[in-house]
Length: 193
Image (cartoon, rainbow, N blue to C red; front, top):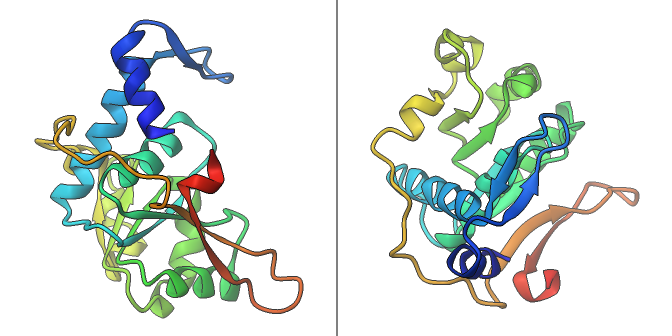
């Protein structure tokens, strides 16, 4: 998928790739590719490295795709967390990922705040839709909070990265947990194509 987007950005840069249903905003292949690579550079500036797991708790928006595919270009691994997870389920998923960085939306801050003291590895929370004052909210007692202005400061679309391969991790997903605790399963890009 990231390679296809990159190829389409070259061959059909102004064609519509995605239209947001709620806003009717149109995104071209070039827009999508540039934004994915902008996220990749922003992650890189936060020292995200190949193989590192990054937790995302995002609503279904185009930003969720940017967050996910930006990690892909770094050969880092997205761990999308079910946004309905609370308490022990949320603690288990985030700690199992060994993630030091979470990308989330304001709407999930309360869930994270309630378990913050039990998250073993997290050091940074990026609030991609932060509003003034969020960086001083309750989570700031536990983690470094990064606003979009800080996250993207000096970031530029990264075109110097190696294309992901079919065997590279696409993401880590959790099983339903019907027979006990949810288990993490790493999926390669070859399974998603």
